[in-house]
Image (cartoon, rainbow over all chains, first blue to last red; front, side, top):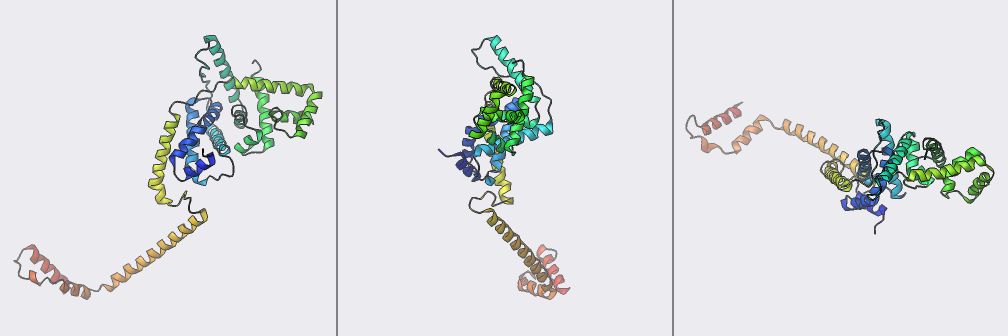
Length: 175
Length: 166
């Protein structure tokens, strides 16, 4: 099976199939980051698609000096933070999907309320703290990987996550 | 290690991402600091809390829509981009070689324009009326001399002879 970096070489040669393979492998990741960052499905889809299209259009400039995933995280993180900075949207709680069809209605309601409270707490964080939190808790990235994705230092990530944790502990104290 | 620094290191400590020495320093501080130990408990609790947020599945048709957009982009690139940037993305030519080729094309275009302008001016000045008349004679239109008055052929012969006379 071709590595991500080999697929990117093929994308640079204009091979759409290779791009399709990359999307299949990483769409869930891009979607998860965008969704947990913006908390809006339509907007998250736009951002995830923009990230992949950007990668597609600049494939010829890609150099496999770093892992492809690092590159993907960087593109999606930049797009999310920039987009939200420019747009500064008003946060509207989105009803989260049901966890399971089998769950009892009261359990589903509780789970839905929990998700809404968490997304509200995330939305109160400043942009970069929120992105660092999303990459850490929903993508399970190491601090070094977050630093690369956010084009910052390891120490800066430590600070972002420590501040975000303090704020979230306060907003989610009832959990 | 003080409390502020310890609390900053808690994320990496939880994830087992610290060096052995740093890990030991944090552990040593936690053993003697109730406030930081509580902070570690909170951090662990927060991880569990955030994990409760449901992630919806990737929307239906996400990949299909994306591939459609990519296909359109690549067609645009072939249609316009390849004309404007014929060597962009070429795996054969390096960026330095592409710049050299582009510079060569600019020089060649410049030379072409200069030569073209020179030929144009030179060609115009060398075309004197007498030469034009001689050329007309060379066409051998004598066979039209007997054409009836008012016919198109007659008008053409008149026109030609007028030009020659001027």
